Amino acid sequence: MYALTSDQMKRADRFAIDRIGIPAVCLMENAGKALAEEVKTFADGLEAPGRKLNRRWLILAGKGNNGGDGLVAARHLRSLGLDAEVLFACPPEELAGDAALERDIAARLGIAFLPGADNVRFGRYDGIVDALLGTGAAGAPRDAVAELIRAANDSGLPIIAADLPSGLNADTGAVHEPCIRADVTVAFAWQKQGLVLHPGAEYAGRVFVRPIGIPEEALAELAPLARLISPETLSGALGIDAARPRREDSHKGTYGHVLVAAGTQRMSGAGLLSTRAALRTGCGLATWALPASLTRHLLGRLPEAMLVGVPDAGDGDWTHVSAETLLRLTEDKDAFAMGPGLGRYADDSQWLRAIWEGAQCPLVLDADALGMLADAADFDEWPERQFPTILTPHPGEMGRLVKRPTSEVQADRIGIARDYAAKHRVTLVLKGSRTVVAAPDGEVYLNTTGNPGMSTGGTGDALTGVIASLLAQGLSSLQAACFGVWRHGRAGDLARAARGGQTLLAGDLIEYL
View: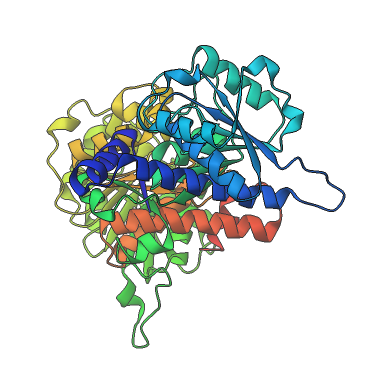
């Protein structure tokens, strides 16, 4: 499934109208009919023994095409057995084009137009349809539109939004003040990015995507597109069998060897979690490199993994570990993950550069390795790696990489991830709720698995191991990143369902990989 920007949706509309010749009013008719059908389904769900319903819905209509969609919905609701009344955000005579045509049709059918918000008694209705602002709206709602949004939110009635909640940015998921808080959003033709990203996803409620007659050929005009990661996307666009069946004649060498460089005296668990997650994800072998003085304390904690102690002068950190030592360990490995619990040291950015240039295998950088990268003043001069390279920052780390506040990263997650991946020729995994995966060629994938219970230390370390394991098993960087975040989030969902609680430990998640 695709998630479009407002500009892409506008271009898809123009393709259907100008290139294919579908009249715009036909698209409006299809959108309004789809909206009415979802309202009817929702209304049927409100029925319960002893509950008296009015079987009447209030349509809030703006002056643009979104308002026209609402007027079509009002007409179709009548044919579905529900009454509908329309409250305009402007004088009805200000509507133009197809919206004005639908206004006149509704008027001739006797659909009630209400004179103003001051006279509305919300108790007369079972719910509200928000058809005030569409994907083309910019800036915060003002004047009468803002008043209607506040009134709708304060009414206590369920709200169904046409295409997206009024006041929500269709591209970034940012919400203006005020913004409709919808129970359901009926997205026309395709999902919108702002309905997937937070906080927009919270304001959208449940999202149903309904076709309105725009042909799939329009998508060819819109690249690069963002996709939602789903089993269908994994098997289709990405060519991955999520079941990952093992061959009958396979052995441990078949599934690759992962090297994990992670952990210090203070954060030894980071390496343990990454290595364990790599094994659970299916690599045949895993070697955990860590400061030598820590190995005796960790013997037997993960008997399936091999431990390699690197010289540490007895202090349990990486200060005295040369890049050459690590590079020798990568020589027979199929993927190399480094960063969790690694710590920071003098000149560590140049230490990382030697590994960046010298590692002859796929590389996953996380946590402290990303801090080293962010502090490398000459990073723009580093050569492009010839092997798959995946960076997995959380929003704070992403902010340090691009030298911008975390709030700005969160306000434009897709744009920032896409630009960084393209500029530095890496696959970037911007973690968080609705993780963004950006490829060097501009492709973007949005993950929808996972839950707030995963907001705990160590889950990111586990993801590093998951992605490295998939790389070792032969997946491309984009495949490993997308399948990795989807599988990681799904494991979190399974773990929370099994535990029946709101919080998880990273170890809980790993057991469901």
